[in-house]
Every structure is written in C-alpha cells, then in structure tokens.
Amino acid sequence: MCSARVVKAGITGLLVGLAFLVGSAGADAREQAAALPPISVGATPIGAARPILAWTEFCRSYTAECAVDASEPTRIALSPSVWSLVVSVNRRINRSIRAQTDQDHWGVPDRWDLAEDGVGDCEDFQLLKRRLLAEAGLPRRAMRMTVVIDEKGEGHAVLTLITDRGDYILDNKTSAVTAWHETGYTFIKRESQDSTGWVSLGGVTSPMVTANR
Image 1: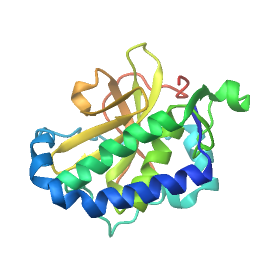
Image 2: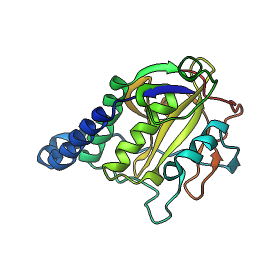
Image 3: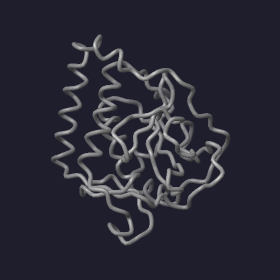
Image 4: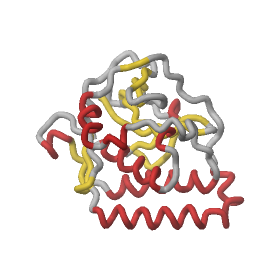
C-alpha cells in the first residue's frame, strides 16, 4: 500500500494543536456553520468481504486499531468544531508525511503501518489520521479504512468518516474532505462497523494490495 512516517514529537504536537481546536471552536461556531458539508446519502454495505492481507497482518501487531467497540456510536455527529477538526487533521497529516511506496520503504508490495517513522503510503496516512481523531474523541467505530480503485485504475486506501450528514472521505491525495460519491473512485470494501472484518461496497474489482502512494 502507501507508506508513511511521523516523528513522535510531531504527533504530540499535533495532539496539542487538535485539543486546542476542540476547546476553542465554540467561539466561532456560528461563522463556521456555513462551512458544514451538505447532507448526502452514505454508502451501503452489501455483505461480507475478504480483508486485505496486509490489514490482517497489521491487526496482529495493533489489535486495538482493528477492534470494534459496540458501545461506540456508528455515526459521528458533525458540528462546526468537529468538522474543523477533521479538515485540520487531514491537511496536517498530508503535509507531515513523506509519501513512499511500501516496496521502496520496506521492500514488500504491501504493508500497513502507523507512519511512526515519518514516511508512508496511502493506508499509513489514513491510519494515523484515524488514531489522532480517535484520541481527540471521535468514535473509531465511525471511521473505517476503505479500499477503492482510484482515477488511475489502481488500488488505493482512504478513510471513510460515517457521519450524520453522510460518508466523507479523508485522502492523502487531497486536503479537501469530500463526500464519498464525489471522489470519482470506485468503492470496493471497507472495515465492518459490527465486527473485526470487512464489508463489500459493490465495486466489481477488488485489488489484492493498495499499491500506490
């Protein structure tokens, strides 16, 4: 997949900045309200799907990153402050990580990681974003790793935020947080919200790896 790396001190700094955003956003919530995305229809899972092999290997090392907590909400309630947080995390991580393929980084076609060395490919960007957002208080259960076919016809990983205004995508290719149906991607599958596994999103082609940056 795509690979990523971030110095731990940098992650700490990001968390401090995110905490500030959450605590101070109420002051200008009225101004930001107009920036909330429009309400749209979310993607509909249509059954079980086979997990990406590299995800399975990642889960052996990072069990908590793959576990599903049934007590968590299945949707994120988007407020101006939460939306500001999401947009900020997407932008900051995209700027902080140096993109590099897993083949160049690790010498293997696909490896999922948390970008702890500051270098990564697509899934590493998204996994780090999810960790930061979860640490800032968003429900992990409503943030699902997702495999798509991108504009080049290649496997790619994004992070789907399932919200009360629809499904929105965090992507290392753009700092814009976009509704899933406006990305131009073919959506193949994503992590289940109900168990440790994956569900199909109806795409006809399922990549074995998420190989681009």
